[in-house]
Length: 546
Image (cartoon, rainbow, N blue to C red; front, side):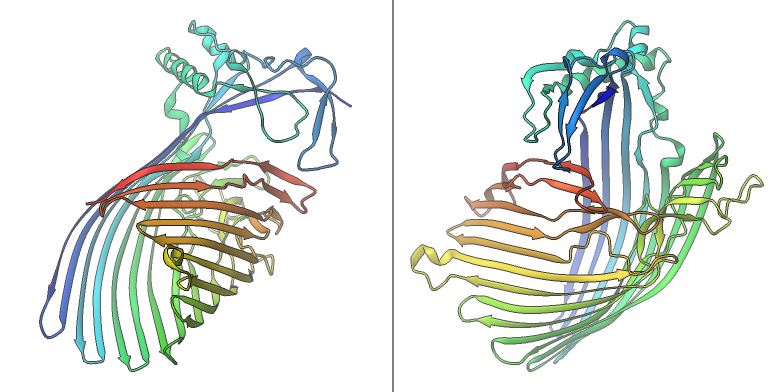
C-alpha cells in the first residue's frame, strides 16, 4: 500500500508543419557524335516547425491517492485505488503550460553542370556542383513556463484543467485498473493559448523566452564539388568507376549562456575529401548476374548536434554543458557490396547480397569531458567540463547479408497473373569503439529483419499487403555504455492505388493494422521505461499530376 501519491495529468494537442518550396531551371544539349551537356540551377526552401503546448497539473494534499498495484506483468501494472477516486481533482492554481517549440528554416542555392562523351564502349563523364545553404533554427525548447491557474486569476480568466474532463470513458486497451475519462484537449489548448495572449498583453508572460538563446543555431554551409567518371560496357561486363572531390566549409554561430549571461561564439571548419567508387556488373548467363561494388561515403551530423549554442553550469563539480558539439567530425565509411542475382523464368528474381562497412568517427550520444578550450571565455577553464551531446567514437564495422525473393505469378490464368510475392530476410551485425568502451552496438540496428509483401498489379490497380518484423535494438546510448533498448515488433500495412486516368489516381494507405504495442526497456524487458500504442492509421486521397 502506498499513501499520499500525487496524480499528475499531462495534456497536449500539437501542430507539426512542413513546407517545401522548390524552383529549378535547367537545360540539356546533345550532339550527334555522343556529346551531352546539362546544367541546372536550383533554389530550395524548407520550413519545419513543431508547437506542442504541454499543460500539466498534479493533485496535492488531501487529494493525493492511496493505492496498491500488481506488478506481475511489468508492462501493464494494475493499480487499485483505496477509497474514492475523482479524476477531476487536479490542482487549479498549480496548473502550468510548457510552450514547447522547434523550428528550422533552410535556404539552399545550387548550381550543377554535367558533361559526358560516348566513345564506343567507353563513356567519360565529368561535372561540378556548388551549393550554398543557410540554416537558422532551434532545438526542441521547453524552457518557458506559464502558471495558468494563479496567473489566469490575475487577469480575470481563471483556468481549471478539471473542467475539460468529459463523461466519455477512456478505453486505452491497457489494463490500468483505474477508470479515466477522455479530456477535451482541443478546447483546453484553445483556452490556454487565449489566456497566454492576455498574460502577454498584461506583461505577465514573455513569449520571447520560449526559445532560450542557448537552443538557437545559425549556420552556413558551402560545398564545392567536382567528379570524373568512366563507364565501360564490353560484352557481359559493365564497369563504372570514378572519384568525387569535395570541399566543404561550415560557419557555425550561436550563443553560450553561463551565469545568465549570453556570449556569442563562432566555430568555423573546413574539409577537403575524396570519394572514390567502383561498380562492376557481370552477366554470367542470361539469367545469372554478379555484382561487386566498393565506395567511400560520408554522413554529416545534424544541425542541432553541431550547434554552438549551449547552457553552462559553472557551479557543478565538474561543471556541465548542455548543448551542441561544434567540433564533431563527419562519419566516414569505406564499404564493399557483392550480390548474386538469378532471374526466374517469367517475371521474378532470387538474390543473395552481402555488404561490409568500415566506419570511422562513429556518431553517438554520450556525456564526456569537452577536451578543448572552445568554451574557455571569461577567464574560466572549462576543458574538463562534462558536455552532454553527440560525440565521435573510434572505428567500427557494420556487415550483413540479405536474401531476397521476387516472383510475379504470371503462370496463373487471366486476371490472376497480376498477383505476386516479394520478401526478404536481412541479418545484420556490427559494433564500434569509443575512447572508454569497446564493442558497442550501433544505435537503431536490429540484428534480424524480415519483410514480406503480397501484391497485385494489373488493370490500373496497384495493391500491396506488407508485413515487417524486426528484432530488439539499442535505441539510445548512455554515458557508461548502457542505454535504452526497443523491443522488436511486427507491423502489417496495406497500400491501395487505382489509376482512374493517366493523371488521376485514387489511393489509400492503412498502416499498423495489428495495432502493435511498442516497448522501450533498460537492461531487460522486465524493467520497461515506456509502453505505448499509437493505433492504426488510415490515409485516403486523390493524386493529380500534369
